[in-house]
Image (cartoon, rainbow, N blue to C red; front, side, top):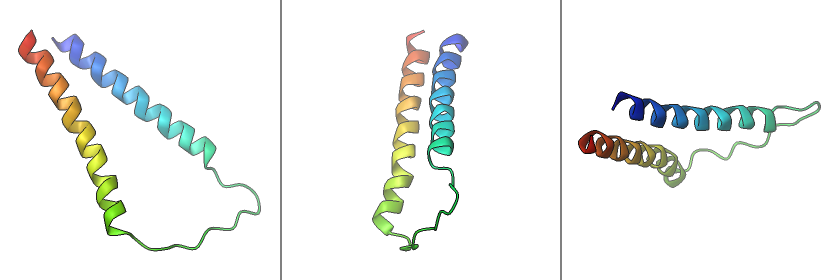
Length: 71
């Protein structure tokens, strides 16, 4: 049972880590770069960026509970 949890969490960690490294390499500051004008927060976009990770965590929790109850 513990092995299944570790596999799921390890895969999730590797995916998030890979996205982080890719984003750091892709969006690094280049010479002569001028920052864009800050448009300010947008309520609906902020809610979207908060709810998407929450939904992903709920999905992972559902999968882990299913694995736990099946075994």
